[in-house]
Amino acid sequence: MTYRIERSTSGPGVTFFLSGEMDRDHVGELEALMAADSNRLVSLDLADATLVNRDAMKFLARVEAAGAVLVNCPEYVRSWIDAEQGGA
Image (cartoon, rainbow, N blue to C red; front, side, top):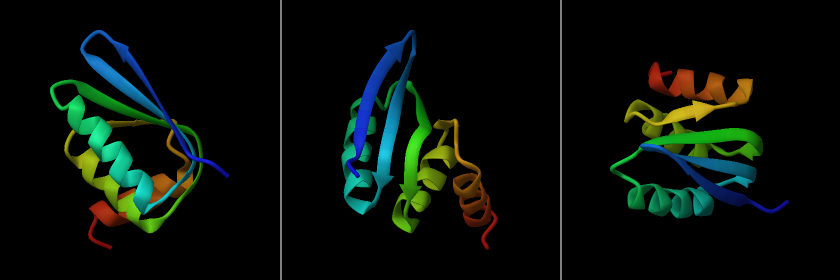
């Protein structure tokens, strides 16, 4: 399966729509795109993300803690993030 990132802006924010399997390589790509929009409110829409590995989950936990909003986050990803942020 392929991985795709689509970017959409509205007002002061930017949303990245993620689809496919997210892994370490994709984290680097997304991180670079987000850095270019560091002055905006960032949302990550995970509705079409089919699989997220541990590296990607750690990245998602880190950016959420820094203020990014996760939209349509699958329950298994939310559980991982909550465990990571709780120190489990």
